[in-house]
Amino acid sequence: MRETLQTPRNMCYNCNRPTSSCLCRYITPLQTKTKFIILMHPKEYKRIKNNTGRLTKLSLCHAELFVGVDFSQHQKVNALIQNPNNFCTILYPGEKSINLNTKKLSLQNRQLIIFIIDATWDSAKPILRLSTNLHPLSRISFTHTQNSMYQFKRQPFVEALSTMESTYAILKALQTQKIETIEKRNLDNFIKPFEKMVHFQMQFAKNPSLTL
Image (cartoon, rainbow, N blue to C red; front, side, top):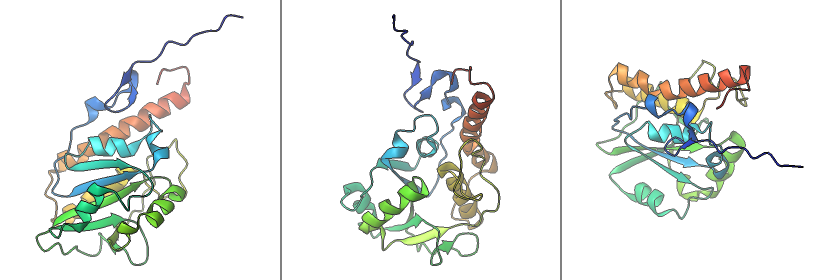
């Protein structure tokens, strides 16, 4: 019996998607005062097509992405945390977190650093537990009542957002606090790659014969 060989698809090695659904043309890297550090779980790294952590990194000029589970000995992460000129926070909801919608951050002329864990809720817990260097950081959160646009992926609860949507919500809150001064058009453009990604996936869901 002759084996049918599938022709390998052309890939974009920037956004890690097939060239037929490449998102790069929709990405306009946003210049921010805040520095974002995305801590990506290895399982998320393997999700090529729907990885919003990587998409978020590509959409921000002032961002870095690190892959792992335990960041307690990560040199670059520790250098940022130990720098007295930085005000380091981590996005993680909870009773003691600072809600950016209701409380203003007191930076005192320090550089705002926001760590964002890019993982499922179950995978995020061991990252935070093992990365003891993150424990002393101020936790931040935001109020969000709209459902995620992530229509093709089941979320643990209706208000749960993707990494890119969460970053967008943070930027809007920081804009209100005058920590960021981003033009509305540029801020709106930030979320467009995510919207296009959802559009591509919904098209494929309706017609699986499409090349994605």
